[in-house]
Amino acid sequence: MKLIIQIPCFNEEATLPQTLADLPKSIPGISKIETQVIDDGSTDRTVEVAAACGVDHIIRQGTNRGLAATFMAGIKNALSCGADIVVNTDGDNQYRGEDIAKLVAPIIEDRADFVVGCRPIAEHEEFGIVKKFLQLVGSWVLRRISKTNVRDAASGFRAFSRHACARLFVHSRFSYCMETLIQAGNSGLRVVGDDIRVNPKTRESRLFRSIPEYVRKQAATMLAMALLYRPLAFFNTLAAPFFLASFGLGIRYMYLKWVIYPDDPTRTFIPSLILLAVLSVLGTGLVLAGLFSSLFVAQRRLIESVLTNQLERR
Image 1: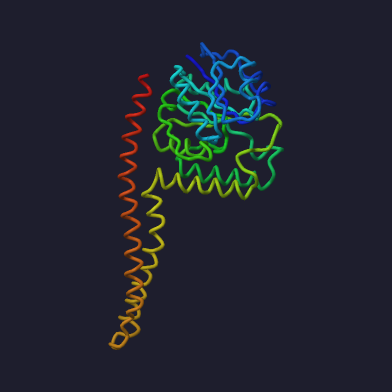
Image 2: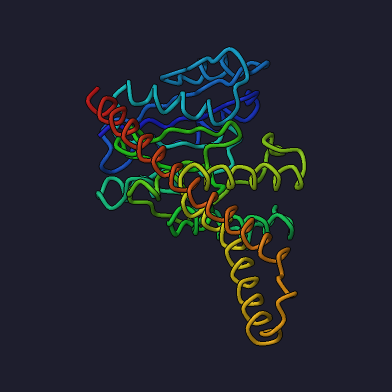
């Protein structure tokens, strides 16, 4: 069984040597381990350092395309190189390399297709109270959307079987973490989370500059993924307030017309009836939008299934 450990990199010349040195040289159940660095348009010596450290596969994108595109470039190359399992870790040495054996064990034992290394968020000394709260809340929301039980949705320390890799299609440009979880959970892949350890922080995150920016980007990603993968539930949720308001107006109309003013023909309540009709039409329109979007989802899944079969046969 062949394992490829991939590291998306952007200006990681200072931390990459230690990250590579910490990776395991052998794992029970794995016959071959190879390393892969995907350079996201670094302006330092990341590529030269990777070559000097003996990295097996170096992919140079030439320009900075973002973490999501860099991750997918690595997945595609790993599949073409015959990987049975792909592990993704960070170039800043955030995660402990020795935990890779723990991460891939459920896949080797055929208990999972997708394993997420879950950090000890509540006990993490380098996370502030606000970040801990946002991480826990965000992971809770994502568990509902993705139908998984993963406790750390933002963790980039992950292991994928070849079958799972072939089913990954990332649309987001910000990060692959949330979308791949949502996609896996809604595609019937076996997703598990396993506790892992972290190393001391070597640098600040480059994905976002502040907590408000992080919240905005993650919220936008969750909203887009809910619309992309569960459109019927999304539009039905939007339609519910309109239907509830129109129902309330209908009850109010019947009460006033038949109980309070049963013999007063001048009480027509036309404005309320017009508002009731408008709210009902809006709610119905949202439900129809959800139904039509579901048809597009079915079509997209069919296309993804065809592409998955082609990738797995390579």
